[in-house]
Length: 351
Image 1 (cartoon, rainbow, N blue to C red):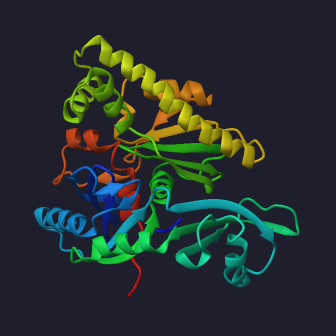
Image 2: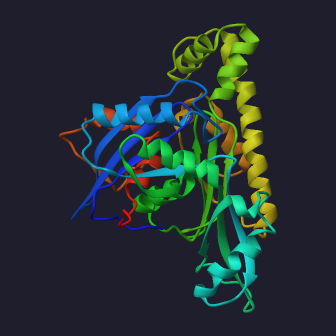
Image 3: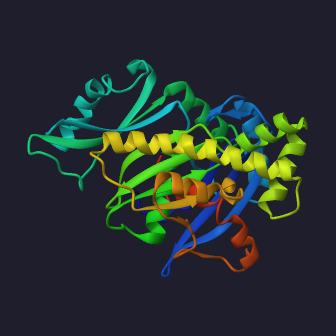
């Protein structure tokens, strides 16, 4: 995982329902959050991680940067969704310098995209030494047009896309900065509006990563359908229930049944992980994302997966500028900020 950089970098986390902006600086006491802001996105601009309308998204980024008087021009952003694949593979042991030449041929066996239409990266897993004749490598592939639209959205807003990360890796980066490299195997879950980022860490290294196409919007859709109300009304009812406010009993029933479906969908990914990782069991879940406050969801998920949970605190060790933020504001953004903060911690590339 990347180290902090001395040069300033502004993180642009493009989600389904909002864009988040973050700036982190380093001090003798460690990382300090200097800036955080959010800009809502209209429905349909981003679908499953894919930027549908790059020009409009760029305009939103530009407005967000201007509103917050950001002077930094070097930016980082994250990729997520079905057009990004992260997979742990085993390949014949060789010198690291030779892996880059061989990885394209190995990738053809595992990536369901045209190999000529993807951007490909890899990371050798040092802590997972296997048999003497082979080694484990984390393979990362993304469709090039998907990559181009992400870069275009950031650079059309007047920024320079210095870092193009994977959102799940940024989540892990933020976790490591606060919790260190824990012994054993743990899972990070960031449950957003339309997608849940799942990352499994073993002794500090990412060994499994998947973006699951389900999130808080599933509740909105189900409430709207069952109660015959608009999406806006349904979302308002969902938020009211999440805040502990009084709502019709039907809403609570819908939320409970939807939580069962969401938990089952996420559990399926855990079962896939277990089947492909020699049965390494998850010892604890660390959860984040705006949807973790939906009543009963995390408890249902913890029981379904069979592992205790803890709410991921991105400010466990990281501090924040007390002139820029109140404690109440930091409490409000804890759940939704880890990916943006992780992106902001990356080391800028020289260009």
